[in-house]
Amino acid sequence: RAAPTRTVPRGGGMAAAGVAAGLGSGDFSDLREIKKQLLSVAERSPRRAGGRAQSGGPGLTGLSPRREDARDLDAYTLAKSYFDLKEYDRAAYFLRGCKSQKKEKFQLSDFLRAGPLEKGQVKNEALRELRVELSKKHKARELDGFGLYLYGVVLRKLDLVKEAIDVFVEAAHVLPLHWGAWLELCNLITDKEMLKFLSLPDTWMKEFFLAHIYTELQLIEEALQKYQSLIDAGFSKSTYIISQIAVAYHNIRDIDKALSIFNELRKQDPYRIENMDTFSNLLYVRSMKPELSYLAHNLCEIDKYRVETCCVIGNYYSLRSQHEKAALYFQRALKLNPRYLGAWTLMGHEYMEMKNTSAAIQAYRHAIEVNKRDYRAWYGLGQTYEILKMPFYCLYYYRRAHQLRPNDSRMLVALGECYEKLNQLVEAKKCYWRAYAVGDVEKMALVKLAKLHEQLNESEQAAQCYIKYIQDIYSCGEIVEHLEVSTAFRYLAQYYFKCKLWDEASACAQKCCAFNDTREEGKALLRQILQLRNQGETSSTDIAAPFFLPASLSANNTPTRRVSPLNLSSVTP
Image (cartoon, helix red, strand yellow):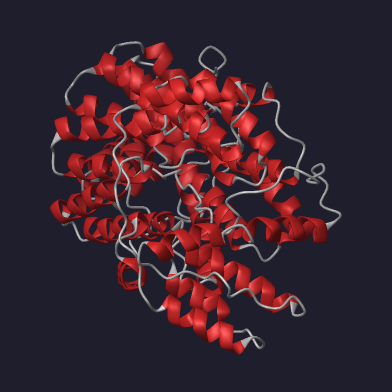
């Protein structure tokens, strides 16, 4: 499945609200001041906890520990944030090292064991009336940071994007530590140019926001630089930053690096659920069934009613080819959160596996409604319409996916195939060559380009592409199971035979004998070469420029001469 790019961090790792006074600029030199701001926000949370206590849930008012032990205060505040998010096991885990205030610690642990509260659902059917009321308060400057956030959400739900962006920016100025406002703003920004025109508050929270938005916009290099600067500034133990770095590597398909970071993250924060659906995607891509099974069981024990848990279980069933069950769990995830992007996209993938194209189209369209930057949904729509043999439709969707991921070879190869079906061969050449230039993930771009040259009777260019393809396959040390390798050797054998280069033709024909589908043709060509040599035919010496292949091939009598250089100036973008 195409690598997913979704994850919206919950507000537990960062405080959900803040005070505007004394936040200062984006300078990280005074970590004490930053910590003081975060603690001042955390102290306001008993109001929320007290409200839950009145409705029958456990409250934490009055459990504030003495200030003399800063380390225990840190652990307590972090645990309390997780408690407010109803992640009780996770809260208890981070309290385990507390050495002082044992009475309060154990009392809190008792509350943690009380279990999660039931979540009520409120359907707001009066958004327009709510907008009018909030608009009046906004003009009268009666809205605080939370009120502005609510107003922005109402505007976003009414598809008033420009107005919503302005309100969320205002909310960020009034309450810079309210991470929810930053996240809503992030979901409405579509490109880097749009980001430049925003007047953001000069606060350290801006650095977290920029790192997050760069990850969402697939500007991974800039995102990693931002996260590294945050780590250097003193956030080296932040599990949120570690998880976002793993997501960034996931987005550029550095699977080994991302898996390594996620495994380390699981050791540091074993009850973590955020981003574990992204981790499961990596395990899925690598077909690591035991690890994915363990992750699914583990998350189910922690909280089986979380969206991420449902997605992980869905991925597990998908890997076992139980696509109906997988789709069921993705549907459960969407019942918990209808705006969860990853579940819509993954459900679209499952419907594709079940050949239910209409349901897949609907799922992908829902994903685009949630986030227009989700290249996987655009790409999935392109694949669906390709199955339905509607090339103009799939060309449109592949173009949109390519705009979001300009350096992803899979989008370029898909575009090339579309152009080829529409008989726009020059555009197809450009796409295949560009896919090779940016780093062909599936190593098929050169083969498709070579076949295109074959159709156009450009034998020399086709031979050049096949030679380069064989070079790449053998130099990267992959197990050669590509059907196209035999196709490449067969074409080169015939090409060298026509050029009367008997040694090269013989070497390629011998290679053909190693593959079942080309064995007979290889043997026949070897017999013809032997017959011509016996008749006194001499090898041509017109092409004498040396062509170096990997040593492993040269040792096996691989062609050592080169066709004239391929001129791609007319087709290179």
